Image (cartoon, rainbow, N blue to C red; front, side, top):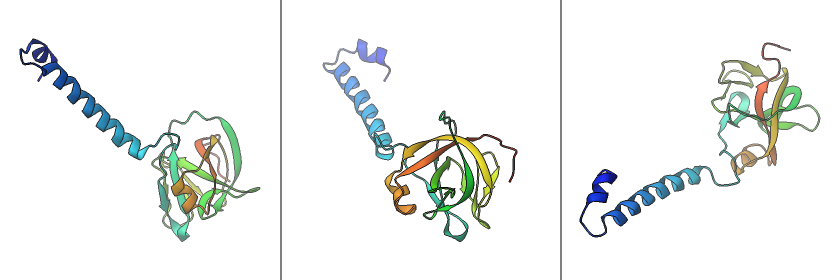
Amino acid sequence: MPISAVLRSKRPGALAGYVTAVALVGGLAGGIYLMGHPPGSGTPARVLVGAHGAAVVATSPVDSAMEASASGTVGVVGGCLGIVDGTGMVVSWPRGSRPLEDRVGVRLPTGRTIEAGEVIDFAGGDQEADAATREACAGTTSVFMFGYLSHPDARS
């Protein structure tokens, strides 16, 4: 029923009923969203397993505005694809990324593949790992959220 009809209605409580219904629908929609995106947890992890059991964490927003730079050799860190240089860090690849099926690596939503052993320069930022990522990646407590390749056409 359109709001104009509710406002013209002579029935007692019509407007209160309408407002209550709108509030309930909004509350339900918000509750459903929060079940998948609890406050303070970031985006829920999507952990996909590829070749040789290497997991790809794909939670980073495709339009990430994080600008910290990182570089290193791609490899497996605690069971997940990341940067193996130094102490190692798990990378959260952009949403829509998929693990390669025949070799250790990832296919980005752009179609670009990045394989283990490749040296990459990229931008992004550090974020606390969620429960699914900690479980899949040997207890890692943070991930580097992949933003973009600094040199997208460069190959090692």
